[in-house]
Length: 246
Image 1 (cartoon, rainbow, N blue to C red):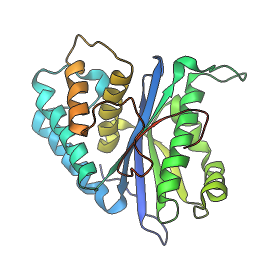
Image 2: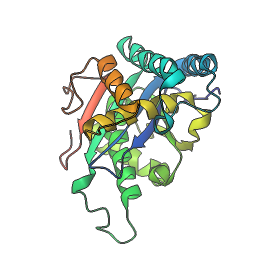
Image 3: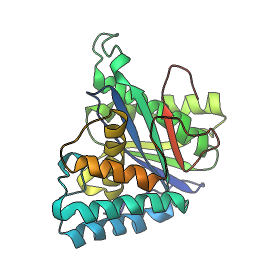
């Protein structure tokens, strides 16, 4: 699939994101920020990895069982971090201690609401903060109830970014849900985010997922996902969310 990311007057940047493990102690949301002129190249590469491995559906953390697909998944992970290391894409992650949240503090709210709030924080304090002064930002999130609210909060998000971060007015041009089956970069985010969530939750996988989670950590160049990256980090950021802004 070729994903349009055109902006007006400014170069465009799109963020492709997903979330994992909302029912465990730690929820992780994150994804890849990609310049508009690189999207088709990356989509084509991910499609080639799928086709060469005979994967008929999509790369998906929840469905991974190793076996004959192991090489393709590891190639996807290597490609993801090669993009980050070469500064062709940025990976932004937020880790939230969902085990300590009251998801029903307000009537009608639930864990989906909380995930939407974490997406809001990620969009504000990573996308708008880093790119809001110089890029026309488009956000594409894996479709579901856990991304439904944020897709309707673009105006509020832009207002917050303008007021608190000196971003350009209307810095985030669109926030839309997408079906991961149709967007390879969301699939890539799904695999990475799922692996990070497995590690921060100390999940003892008896399946091949544990080996893939270890592989993702090694490919990242980090010793663990348990600490925030430095404030100066731009192309790989990890943020353990608290009530204080960072």
